[in-house]
Image 1: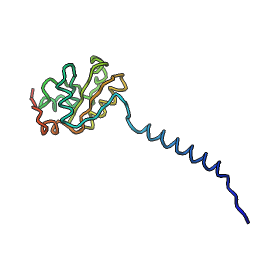
Image 2: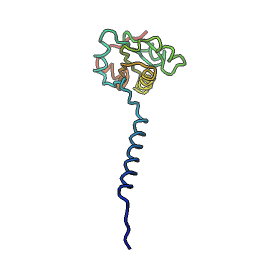
Image 3: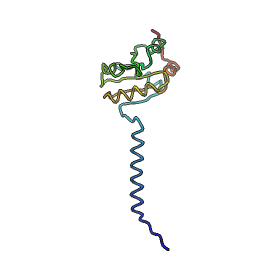
Image 4: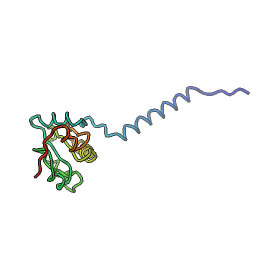
Length: 139
C-alpha cells in the first residue's frame, strides 16, 4: 500500500497557521510606535529636556507623599483621566511614571490611543528614579 500526500496543500496550511500566529502575537502586544519604554537614567535625561510634560499617574495621595519636581498628577485609575490628558499637547513629548510601571504602561497605552505621538514610559517606578539620583519632592 502506498500513501501519497499533497505537500503543497500541507505547505499552504502551515503558511496560513503561521500568518494567524503572527497576527495573534501582534494583537497581544501594545506595539504602538508612539511609546518608548526606558530605564530610569534615560527617563531622567528625557524629562530634563525643555517642553517635556512629566505626568505622575499615581493617586493624589501617592503624589503628595513624593513626586518628581514639575510633574503633574493625573491618576490613570481616576474617572477623569481621559479628560485630563485631553488638556495636553498631543504632539509634544509626554513622560509617564508611577510606583512600579504597571499604571504608567496603562497610561501610555491610553495616551497612544488618544493620538499622542511621543510617549516616554518609565520602566520601573519612582523608587527606581530616586535610586538613579532623581530628587523627590513632597507636596
